[in-house]
Image (cartoon, rainbow, N blue to C red):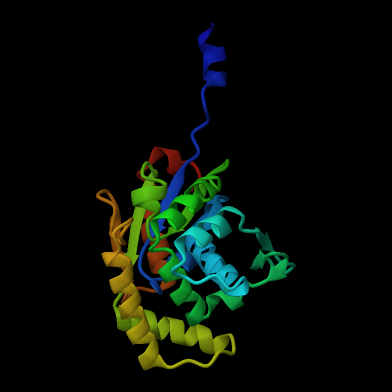
Length: 240
């Protein structure tokens, strides 16, 4: 077999940027900005857990019923679309739940179901399937440590609990939801404790991750730092 034929038959490398971080760190916004510029696909892994939490509520499944949640996760009817305005749209069992899964109640349910080993295992393959040509930007809490451990670039995005609560507070008000800033700070701190202390896939930076504290940084500044890091990775630099 000629070298040229072997080269054509070699598997295509699909680059991945993994962006992890706690709730409210801005990883979703950063992931979409980066993916748009690179022309990559996006995986909002947190949405999958929120969707599972919503499905559990819809089907009267307790968020601590691991066996039932595992079955529900394996058959989760989800679609990630883009609406006429170019905005992300998420359907659960054919219903638009884009805004519904962003409530604090949905976030708490997501954090609870995400702590269950069998649930995480059921959703692992589904998350990895989002890796498609030309590339993927995946955001979550264990993208660089568990789901894509060989990611070309790993970012761990964080910020103070107070800064994250303030951002979340503004987002909820803009979408017409009632919110309490003090309650958000308390909820974020509780979620951080739950996510960092769970026995499986705890929230932590990957060994090779670039840690970015966005407490005093704007979105554009964070995005630029991600691109600066990406420019040093040959598999990513060609897309910049």
